[in-house]
Amino acid sequence: MRFVRDHIIPPAPPPRRAGGPLAWMRNNLFAGPGNVVTTLLILGALAWIGPALARFLVLDAVWTGTSGDACRPEVIGRPVGACWAFIGEKINYLAYGSYPAAERWRPNLFFGLLALGAAWMLWLGAPRRDLGAWFVFAILPVASWLLLSGAPALGLASVATALWGGILVTLVVSAVGIVASLPLGILLALGRRSDLPVLRFACIGFIEFWRGVPLITVLFMANVMLPLFLPGDVTVDRLLRPLIGIALFASAYMAEVVRGGLQAIPAGQGQAALALGMTRAQAMRCVVLPQALKVVVPGIVNTLIGLFKDTTLVAIVGIADFVRVLEAARADPRWSAPAIPATAYAFAALFYLAVCFSMARYAGFIARRLAAGDRR
Amino acid sequence: MTEPALALTGVNKWFGTTHVLRGIDLVVAQSETVVICGPSGSGKSTLIRCINGLEPHQGGRIRVNGHALTDDPATLRAVRRGVGMVFQSFNLFSHLTVLENCTLAPMHANGLSRRAAEARAMAELDRVRIAEHARARPETLSGGQQQRAAIARALCMDPAVLLFDEPTSALDPEMVQEVLDAMTALAETGTTLVCVTHEMGFARRVADRVVFMDEGQIVEIAPPDAFFDSPRHPRTQAFLARVLG
Ligand SMILES: Nc1ncnc2c1ncn2[C@@H]1O[C@H](COP(=O)(O)OP(=O)(O)OP(=O)(O)O)[C@@H](O)[C@H]1O
Ligand SMILES: [Mg+2]
Image 1 (tube, rainbow over the protein chains, first blue to last red):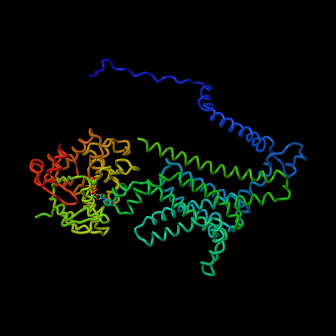
Image 2 (cartoon, rainbow over the protein chains, first blue to last red):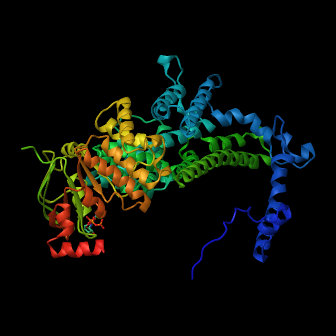
């Protein structure tokens, strides 16, 4: 049998789907018994939590006041939610700890430099991102240290690290962890793939050691043991000790993330570079590493989110990070009221949530862009 | 007498205990085009990859443009700068544009300025007729365009020898010809080509000699007419009967 088409079918519009919110709800919320139960359960949970949260955070919250009395229901005669007046009064302490009030422009400048560095690195279309990398990984650490701890030669009064506190310390610890762990993690990941057995085993040993020890233990070790490894007359700043511990700890995790990226790049990419006469270092730096790092941006950001939250543990070795300062603030007898502890923790939760959620959204945005780039 | 482009003497290679190259002797003259064919697993890719040191060989000698191939990194690089390689799967650097693919090695391995490297790259891209895609990402091009870009990338290093490992096997049929045309043009301008391919028509038209490999050894070498019309070795005859049908 033979078939020959006698007329060509012109293109037609697609069939119309039933529209409108009702159809959408029927298709997406109430499509079957299981779907209906799930929807109702979740809506029920939201109806239970939502209003309670709204009452605590906004409707019943106290916004102004000068002491704990402003946040006592028996004094003001209405139910009391969060006592934001307390946060408002303590905000400088929460931000800077005991950093001298006259010198607070220095942490502020540090926050600004940090924001500049972050924007330069995170905004993919930013100009001269190579300079940005120098800024973030070389200039920023030195400048921040001079700025915050002081440099009498430059006319900046010394401020002992014992006075630093609050969000300042949390950001310093996180920034050090991030800025140190990326390059160290990359070096460790490369070392782990090296042809030199000694280097390879040293890197594997290092990575597995830091991954196998809980961060709390690392912090205690850094505090107690670091001085043992140094000559007797060298003292290490009490803030620097956990910083070193966190940086090494984070590097080990970063190394594993980067290693995953290196493994995801086809061997042919590096071979093509070698076949063109490039050195192995050039092939790694110009061809394999840029592609590997792009693949693992979401993994890197996940690690950084974990790192950012883990920095609260430095409170255990006596560093006045954000959470510890919050604890100290809420012990103020003038502000003793039943609403204060919940307010303090709600504020901490909002702070960490805001930062981590932004990072997660950024990672998602990058992942979508990469996926779009991969589509044919 | 001038130095041959390639001289392999008694080359042996093992993967673990598998003997994949068994005493390969092959001399390729300057400007010669040699096509290597043979059944799958006969060691064609391995041979090609030994010539530019992507795989180390374990016995015998390989000389490329007068340099003895050793495992010393500087020698390896010197040899590789003179030997271009085109892969079956293109292996274009996927984070760079076509133009950047072509300028990366000249700038880093040969120390060319960006301006000089780009001028050269545009000339080579023009030669394989994809200059209009210079700013495109490799993944936005068709397979045939990608493979021509890969050829241009290799040409930018000014290689004396070009190695091809099944450059058209990953392509849809309608794109095979454009790549073969680019290779034919190269052969006519006097570049030394060593080409693993199953394109027997190309071999017959363009090759100066055809090499047949089986089980890690060279079984027969002959000019194309003799090779296709009167193969001598029974294995060659059997192979040609299979591929030519
Ligand atoms: N990296 C490797 N490790 C172990 N064995 C290998 C490796 N590469 C190739 N081989 C083996 O070496 C032999 C020759 O392989 P090669 O890839 O050179 O063959 P080929 O002639 O190119 O075949 P094809 O036409 O399939 O590409 C095969 O038996 C193969 O299994
Ligand atoms: Mg092969």
